[in-house]
Image (cartoon, rainbow, N blue to C red; front, side):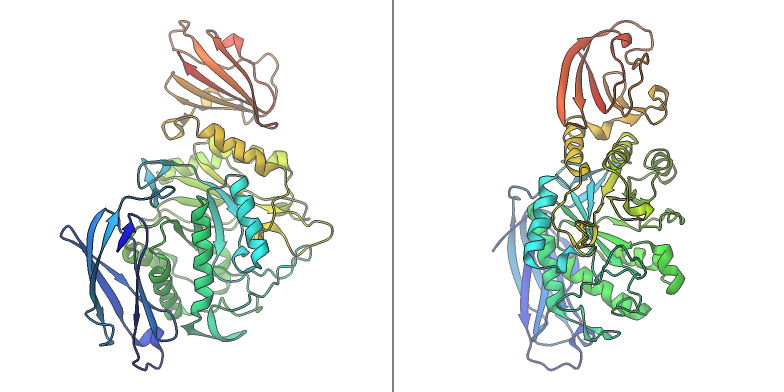
Length: 488
């Protein structure tokens, strides 16, 4: 059997032995061996007397495995497979690159441009199809999505009350058995992750969320049940190369109603995830950003400040930073959901000019429909910022972004911002026209050096000019303009 490097090997086993609760009564693990190196992974119960072990090979070559289980029918099962070169689109999991950036495991730079689709995964097939089409059309590379259903109480302008067709646990609403999973729920969730992978999107999996408010009672796991849930998620999803772990959505709001040992959870993921997926935790808008921890691979934060604060977090944490919620484009009567397209685009550009990353969201109630809003349930993106973000990504990926740093000495407040690599490459983002103000470049000695300047209109998404210049006085800041200067 051949499996792509960074693909997924799956071993399905059956046992006819009766267990009172197979989710907790049976231990199942497997040891995978490659070139003398061993790696253990947990298996999981998938219903109807079936158990599954999944594994993502990180190298090419032969892998051998043997199972270990408390159930004799599952114990000492042996086999092998061949890991082969990855196919098109398979670049491996995302890793931290250097200090501030990301790359796929094969070394390809990864630009994190996020979208917010909290509960799209359990909507009807047509909605899911349009969601994927929107994400692909607008070139998003990461999707923030919950594991449990989404509900918000007391927000009259948005009705977030769709029941999922099935639930993650056995039992009834507000009386679920948190020690018995419903495998079909998680199988559907896995399909969504694979669908995202097929269009080049990372799944930012939000493990805990606190807006149930008695709707389903799915936020009431105790510490032991939460640990069982984490083990199940690692066993089921750890082998998916495009998975990221987000411990919580607005962790500091969760703390008000149920204490969670976030460091314990983060350390558990770090120590038990065989593949070292990305790990972060998300704060409430004006609450404290979670302090730096060894388990945190990157900083995820929520705040309208996508420039100065993002740079300060990069400096203080020494890690990549993503502003995963800088407020949403939309028409809801709340600060978090009524930004215009211009403000949304500007904030996202500022995150890039700070040497970091951002996540978009869309909150339009269309024709009085306050239920089918993209930021939670997906569908079709209708706002004006998303296509312009696709153009942003095109521009950023045309330069070695990971080698460039913000230069505040060459910026004018938030109206003109500069990224550069030494004196051979500059990227200027100009939000506003500044008549009489010229952009600086070149050597400190002031000697004239020729630069090729490519100019883009980032609102109308087009290249407008390409020319050679030798003196700063030749370049003026104009509205919604990006200029890339390359030394000749």
